Image (tube, rainbow, N blue to C red; front, side, top):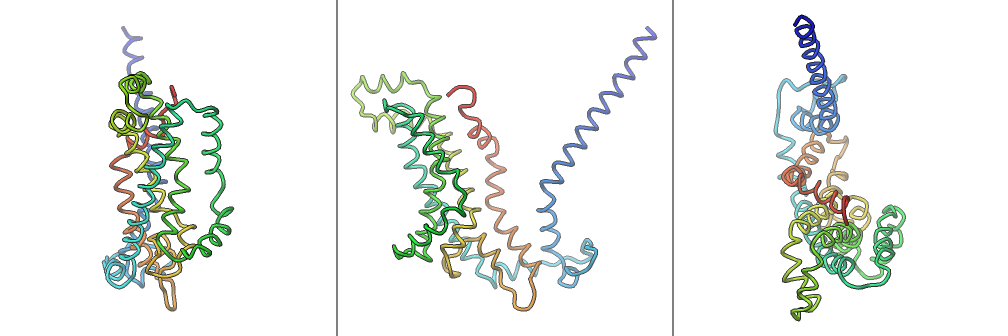
Length: 286
């Protein structure tokens, strides 16, 4: 009995140590991930004179003047609308084209499907800096320089491999017998896609659309290179080029970055489980 009573306190101490260690690790990771956002939030409510004090301090007095200048005296509202137009357009094109490609690769009898899928995925391996120069020259020759259409098409093309990869995995998880039964009943492949597979793959379509939307909303290099005016700049570019006459307006930039991050951050938090499901789709069987 004495040995058992001595073992229980030791076991409880080990359990408490493990729990404490896990909590410390979770807090450290959370602080590492949320640290920049918290710093921007603190900076956005500091007075102008507190922004240049060293070492940095927590604000004794808070102000919302930076948010007022960002929302009412800067072109950030137009840039947010541009980002929304570009992201929605790119997502629509990527999902429509990606759905047709993914269904063909998953269910139609096409020779060399693994090679085709590998080629599709290989196009996303090139960094944007490797293709930005010829892309700029192409858009200039087509007369699309400094237009939202140029940015939307570029985002759609560059995010299409991601949509094809995710949707192919989802279509492969659906029973192949459904497709064969539809074909026996006289359905064409396209009709089978829209009447049978499309409703079943709706969660996968939502995940792919969300990831493409987040990519297009956050993309910077293509949008910076292909636009040249406030009328066409997207939100990330507008924040990077935030106007400052004699000094860098750090408070306004911090407020603008939070305003731009809030919509996509809310989407990511709201659909985080679906995002994880989409990224792991097909990892066990496919």
